[in-house]
Image (cartoon, rainbow, N blue to C red):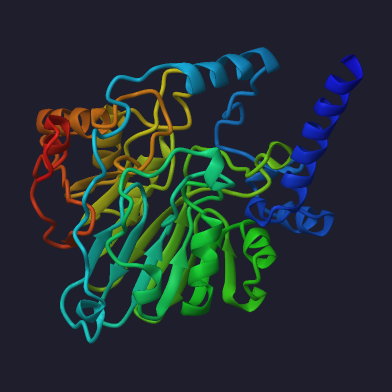
Length: 375
């Protein structure tokens, strides 16, 4: 019996190692040559990328890691997910063709957006898959089973912009489906290793460091700081950079926070590139056990003020259960704080177009799902 148990444990361990090392979703690995190249960056020290506050993220002991995992996987969260599948507004692909009006956004839920101008189509953190995990068996389903516009119906994508390499922002199945449609990928330092492992040619990938700028015709992209971390498996934490993005043209100025804890970098970004017409600001998946790497909703609104935004659109909620709060807690708390600080909070439904210069007002669409009836 002991021999049988030992064999079973060995098979599980070997199976896990093979899965992590060979399943494509995990992406690529930092090479020695890459590390030497990234050593030129002030944000890369002793073989890893770092935050401005070097002690973040906190190094967890094995005991604390087990404790956090136990709470996450076994705690019952009241109202942790919607009572029913979230319906989305469907977008006809024809509505994207020959578009010539003001710049607009289409929210896919969580942190994924399509940005359309009169001449460009951009995808931001296009996590369009079913689960935020290496495999569908390893994560809970997204709250909306459909997405507003299937990848197969999307027009040519001029650029994909990625904030960091976590599964809820960089999704292997989505990237594989998008690969043939995308002209260019703009990503943080190191993230190109995953794209190249998935068959994206190096000449279509531009890796960027904090404060680095580039231009795509009339659009200006700046990769700006965030306070977060990276990694797609236990062995490659902080091997790729993370950050936020400023996207601007002569007609609009947009800020996308990516994932970030609250910090002084927001004020610095606001002073350098603000004011912004709209800030897409992280608001969800927070917990007192990780306060430095994700903002609480009240901090989300304050960060919007720090970057000098006219309005804040809370993101990183409404898509997946990745923390221990109720699924509506982020938006409800953000709206309350927005009213207190006189910051307009924009709350589109998934699949709703949002003009950047004149964003929509607020609607409490999620309340219908709380009552058990679809809107």
